[in-house]
Image (cartoon, rainbow, N blue to C red):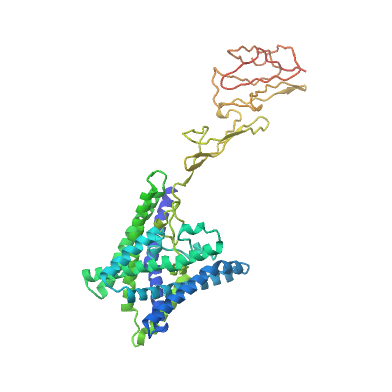
Length: 509
């Protein structure tokens, strides 16, 4: 079963990679390209500066509005039919994707106008933006398809796109001000840094490809191929690296784990940018409709067909990015190692908080600073069974739960079952009680040198018990013994007898 599960997991992960490379990623990229082109055609095409400012403003306003009212809209729509809620959710994703693309287009154009298009600018944009995102713990936000994939069914309409980027805002007690600052930081600062990184990396990829294989179609093929090869490498090492860094067997400091996580994110983000620049370039070469001035129809078809196909494939959530939200890093999870899934949903693993269940037969081990809590519950069913329950013990950071139940019936576990036999309303009982809580304590293995108990029929004969030994009663003996005292006497039997009286008295009515 374990082998089949592993094979199934590998097969589904391969399907994940094929789906994201051949279907989801091209649709997401060409939706962005078609929408970008439509904005070029219709948002103040006569003035580049005005078009960039208006595009940025629309993106900021709509993103901030949606982030601020998303919770309220979900709360109001949740009282209606679930179908209405899903429709509203799709409309919300569509509007967020439009605002996201509008923001990216405006910021990108403003950087082209004021920062320049030189190699030095690209290197500075690439390096400084990544350092800034590392400092704000939002490095994973640079990764898009094919480096990160989600399915609409793994998210719900109550999913919030916005996450607190800077933990210092938690010091502010006013909730409204805290939310406003969180949205402001996410929309204006973090998102601008993400666009800056993408612009620098995009132009660096094209520059390197032009220097290596030439211009034109060769550049498109080279960047696309390089991006897919690197993303495949990241896909192969993703799960082994994640298991290694999040497992309890590795006692590396958090800084080393975080460093390796950010190296992985850097490589994966660079691969994603190469795939986007290559497929975008291929779209400009092949998705051209002859005779259409400015290619309005081609852009509209890319926009509509891509969104419809993603809707049918339950992949529209992949259209959303900054400024609608950002992925954050923390000590509990290595978010950068989570590439998402399409067929199997599993969140990022928790570091040092693995839950492990193991079963033990009769003993609970004590190790170091373990907190062992043992509860003994007698389960007396006509003297048939005794149950022992061991509650969870906490060992380090692991929660190991153990539940052990012993049924001591008849000859099971080498335990002698004692039943009184009643003749003519006469009951002869031998009660074995401990000194604590009057609970019978019987250990599974009773040697000949220890307590020997014999089931007898008829009347019980006299027994002579000394401090060092106890002899079993002979069966079917006809001797009679006197009855003295007014109470039943209990004998404490454990592995070794302690302070046993010289006589065992039983009643003979």
